[in-house]
Image (cartoon, rainbow, N blue to C red; front, top):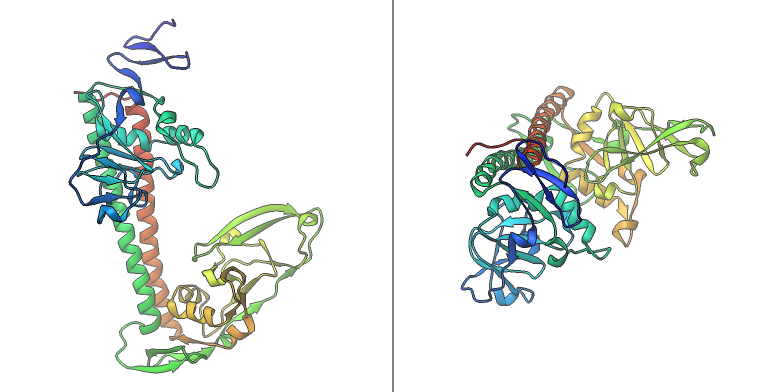
Amino acid sequence: MPRSKIGSKPVKSIFGNYEEIPEGWIFETLGNLCQIRKENNIDSDLYVGLEHISQGTNLLFGRGNVAQFTSAKNIFKKGDVLYGKLRPLLNKVWLAMEDGYCSTDILPLSVNEKLDNRILVKLLSSKEFVTFASSTSAGTKMPRTNWSDVKNYEIRLPQLKEQRKIATMLNTVDDLIYRYSSIIQNTTRLKIALIQQLLTKGIGHKKFKKVNLGKPTLNIVIPENWLVKQLKSVITVENNTINLKNDEFYKRIIVKRRHEGIELRDIVKGKEILTKTQFQTVSGQFIISRRQIIHNACCMIPDSFDNSVVSNEYSIFSGSEFLLINYLDWFSQTKIFKNMILLTTHGVHLEKYVFKLEEWLKLFIPLPPLQEQQKITSILFDVDSQIQKQQECKLYLETLKEGLMQKLLTGQIRVAV
């Protein structure tokens, strides 16, 4: 047995290795600290399916007649920890706040006197446990883990009083993360509402007119002083073809669906690019993927992807004296734009629709004066910046929580009790 540091003791794992833990701590397997609830009588109309389980929260649940759910064979009691064994990478963990039924894809775990149930939620949500559970899962499309696999997971634990202190600290951070999640959701809803409002009603207008944008179903109401211009008259289709050189490296990019921006595909030599018709991107221009535009695959090209290349399945546009290109970027997130795309995309299967660029360019776009375009884009940019700041704060808290969990649940940082 190895010698220990002062204030620590060596413990032997099930694999025969020795590890050091603080004096007074225990080193147990998950199966020795909690068990699956076996009871089968309960008076409740609360049913929880796997889709309702959300990591580390006690806020989401579903109600309904349990007879409607043929898979509802397990029950849980208030205080149980529900763990979704299907696709463990999804990390579905929930602390039950009342009694109810649950799907057989959920393990209802009751803790013994050595373990705080809130700590169990944190442990099952940790990266270490998720990695462990995923390594034991069977199946490819829908991998699942079982109690017989995860019950041997080994846990270091302080005494119950210290566990409770740790749980309270981590729950405080969880509450802040939840608040930021709510703020982000609300600000995102505000942005979506502002996009629909500002790009059709403008700022401070009282007089409006009905216009048609080139198809029978494209009738909208816009401010009286706005123009309606044919797309091909206010945007330029760029044709920045590039002659590939065999031994030069090129940065290829992909435009993501749902207006989620651009990501790097790869960096390859010219001789490795099979489609020889390639276009060079310029930051500040607007790009669409003609194959994926039905899924709103379009955006402004950021500085980080200037001088990249795309195939001839993409179209790139610049603005004009009537249309700011960043205004077009915001307009592409409106319901009107989506309808314009739908009406100029044809096919029998969603994934095989063909976008008719020339047909789309014949449609019309409602345009405020340039000064109002600038005000609208400025407002929306400010809201977007707020969302980004909120997401950064949330990420900081998540990183802080992860670091705290690592240190508090290994004894690197001790809590006074």
